[in-house]
Length: 359
Image 1 (cartoon, rainbow, N blue to C red):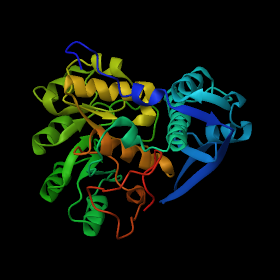
Image 2: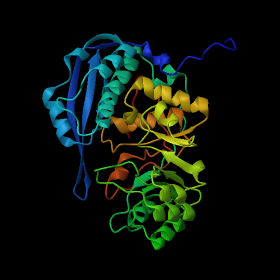
Image 3: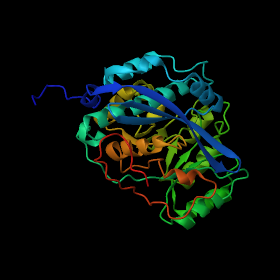
Image 4: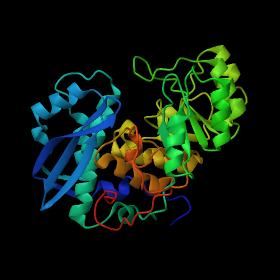
């Protein structure tokens, strides 16, 4: 390669794959998580040429899944394409029969169809994603993300450590965390990241900016990553002054532009494929982080179908040795079963397509 010759982008390595779509099917996915929690998603299956590709719509509003499944997939999605032209078509369509409650749901749905198309195009070409990108698959390290209840207790952490003493955690912090509880968490030695949920509004996990909480956590856990603090208030920003090197961002990150708009250059960002939506933008985001030497880790969306494994697959290719919030989905249960695979996850990913092997 000549010195000034631009390198091929990650997306360019797959965008030209031929894609034939003869049919598109939608099916409900459902999981009972315990304690009255039900997760509903939609399985997207694209079929053509004797192969099928799958993706998962992780939209959080159950009514939006009902509406999609009742309306059926757009008829424009059948025919012959390249993967790149199919993704452009998906992004040009309105995939919601009625406007979604949250704008980010549009990205979730785009990702469901784009990931299914990627899976199908690779299967039709007879190559794996790793082979198509020329990347090695590495053991994928994960952390378990959980909340501690209200009032908060150490029990969710203790319960999981009894299953696997080597587990590491990303925990959702709330203003109800007491100094005593934080001291118990410190004593476990298992907390790798704390999520302040500073960008959620009108959700079940809202957590307003809390300078006292921020300072307590930052002081007690000096080696933990601090995810999504709300620094819009002076007191909250002052509480984390000097901690910029370990502040990470999740909910605000949908694109390269979102990273460049941050007040400080991040050391690490959480790249959730479904939150980016566009396959082109996702691969460009990976390229940007590699070029700018910005760390990355992956995150889940309480997937109950193939979406979890696809996020794990991408993590194993792009940021395997990171605090990936991509533990086996059974850890989302109120009482996870014994025998879940330990971190790091190891999989042989040489089969055609874009799927993590079923356990």
